[in-house]
Length: 362
Image (cartoon, rainbow, N blue to C red; front, side):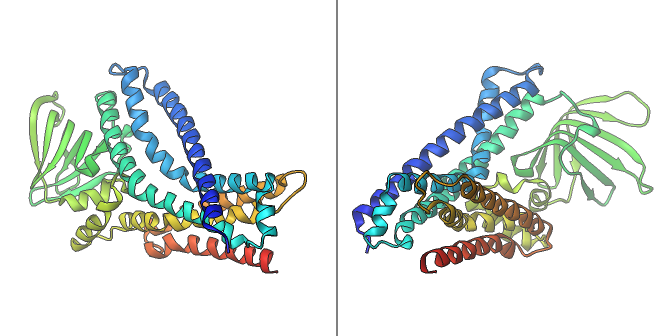
């Protein structure tokens, strides 16, 4: 039976190594994102060094959330390899401590790392990404308002009077605000009868509120308006489900968004997939730790085999790719979100446990 002191020592080693990995990758991601963003936007009239710094700082937590599985994998491998090289695992084994006992602190650390990611990092990342999109929209506002520049999905609304096609260069405030938006009003034959370009469009109760508008009718010159309105019967829940990125909604708000969207008859697959993926994340990190153990616990006189380490990295990367692929199927509705989120985790844990049972109990 492994004592509390030894278990705490292994746990502290895992926490310290994970923290340093996280800080190092955070700094690297920030430098890369800041350099890349500055190179793309330095020519804009509103560009400043501080604005680019702020936008990158707000976006990095979301990128870090995507790297968390790899941080857990590399941290677990580094922890076990360092314990092996210092003969600490050898001594623990000679004292009758099994692999399951000294893996328990690492698995507990991975589980807590996942809980902190979901409960702390995710809300920071979601709010930071939403705010960074707002700042970037202000930076780019007016830079391009052509139809080909629109990256947001188009939506179609039908009212009693007409049909309207709505597009935007950027979606803000989780789908309730559009930047550099365009509204095409169509007649019954599907021909465009009016176009309105707005610097900002806000979804209100029963209408879109447009600011800084240019209105085009026929072949005449553009008419400039400070404010305008476009009637709508779209509900905020529909617009959010259609336009908002699930990553911009914090974990604790997702259940409410899913329930409200489904009460309006919407499937909300993307929101449900994001919710179940976050719920499964702590156990995904435990699975990453088990995969790391399969290639890091074997003692080698001349150091750990590079082939075994590369195999562990490839196995972790394959698990991540499969998770992303299955998540895409869940978002599209081909696979139930619950199944899509948990299937890779269960398979990975089954693989890790089976391999360790074979290695330990033979």
